[in-house]
Image (tube, rainbow, N blue to C red; front, top):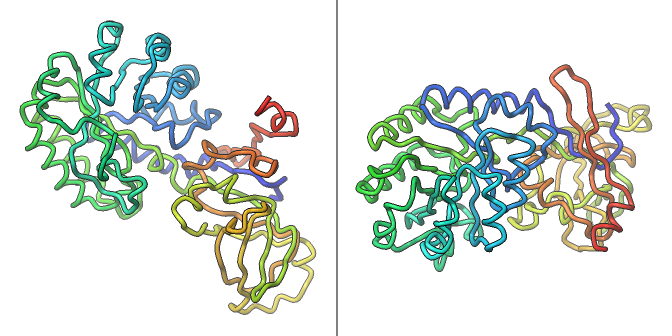
Length: 379
């Protein structure tokens, strides 16, 4: 398949692999899973995901409205801070509104008589390899840190959220953390209807002990008599999409540098933020390259770079067994989470189209962008 690039390609078959694990967990652990829209809001696949998950969780009014309109089921609404206008509108969409501070909860509680009210608690523990993403970092504003103030308003809330993980692949680490939460908040938990353990748990990975995870969650829920929610984002869509780019030019400055029609800054921003290289899923050779000699080696070394003016717009350095040529298409893997929600118009680059590979193998282009989108974005 030759693509009009750049484009994101979401593969429903790969997505299904994650969703079936999420569904299995719900059935065997008696938990509910709500998709974290901050990570993935590409709603043309929401109807497909809807059969396997219990709703969505949002970080803003717009995300809550999108979840209500396009996903349905439960809508959880959290924000670091709500405005008065947002609270008024959220009542139309959300089943649960989760506050970040006791002050905001007290301010808006009386207006939310038709929805569940929750509070985010900072449990003073976390799992994150990046200080930037660590919800329990020093001076963190994410969640209430004063446990005594939580107990004072416990009668006002239906549930709490503990979001303290980021890319946690270690079940033993998670298990110890959950034990800590159960011990530290024992009295509070017995007063609640539900507890959200947030996202950042990579339980859909192939080597994750899913059965142990299910048993641990089920035991915790039964011990305190609460409905447990998980908020998978990356976990739900990991390895389900690629960013397809085309090599436009190859220049040389001490090494060969292949320039593609995309950008880390504009289309895979987290690579820059966390200083990580992209992973290449495959390379589709151009017709011109296919006609050349098939002699293969493993010493064709290239830097792959974006086409913006940002000097550090680099996807990474890679070795290939044949030389790259202009016209080759490079597929960067794991391009679903925190990509489409962060893509931007830096340098006026064409935004990637969004293509869905359906279960039947057919490709469906659900979104394209043009000059009008660029112009109207800021005026």
